[in-house]
Length: 351
Image (cartoon, rainbow, N blue to C red; front, side, top):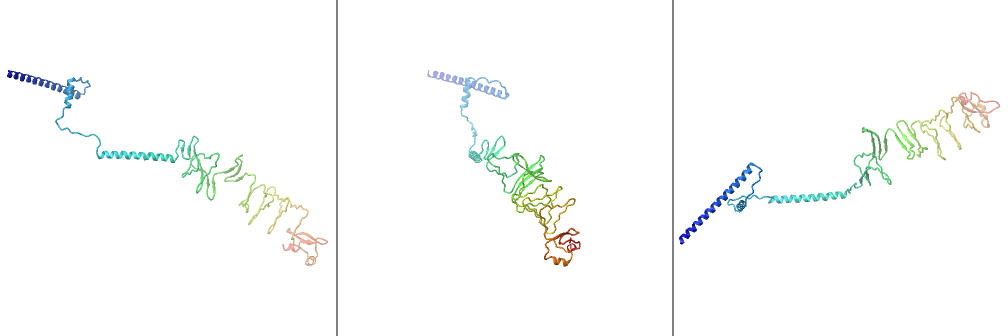
């Protein structure tokens, strides 16, 4: 009996092993078919959907993935390690510090320069133009259409050397220039005018042909007066009240001409004309008229028709006769019962 039971047990064990082998062979065949089918779909590139795996195939696939591999796999680490990682952190930190410094410098510049929405510092930008408050310095030429100050303050232009204002035409050519320097004020233009602010009357104008003074009165306060290099044309020359009028030419002659006459009058004083050599009164077509209560001719020479009569009458003679030589010279001759004027007088002979 024991031998029969042992044989039965051995037979059952063998049948179980055969069934297990068959199951294992079927599983391996199904797995190979699934692998070949998936590989075929991958190579061909068809877009057909994969058939759903059975529960048994899924379990076999997961069990196969969980089994440890017998071969020696090679692991490739992903990432930055070692000195590369330290250099990367250093550059990131340096970039962060640079950004912080730049941001701080930008904020400091905005604070110092007083940047606002309207402008920066004393510079304001509006619809009408640019407005500067305070003292402004321009190191290069300034090209503007109009410059004006505020209503409650003057406009001051200041320079260490000079201030030059230029005017140009559409071609860029210089048409006018005003230069204010330390030694002189120069204006270069075709015509220079000074006008009154209220009425616009021309007070002074100068061009190449003439100089016009439109003021009611021209006052010269210099001690040396006015010096004219050439002729002067004027309708009236008058001194100030209680002041003397003097016309003088120190080294040359003084000439006054007028086509309709020259009138010299002293209403409340004397009129004096003096010269070193000769005083000529000449009238070509008219006459010389002397109208006065008393007419005096001083320092006239004394003439005589004979030396004996002249010597005897010089001591007591008080009345003289006015004589005229042929050349127009006047002299005094002692008055007598008749005329004592003779052309052979010593005054006429020696003149």
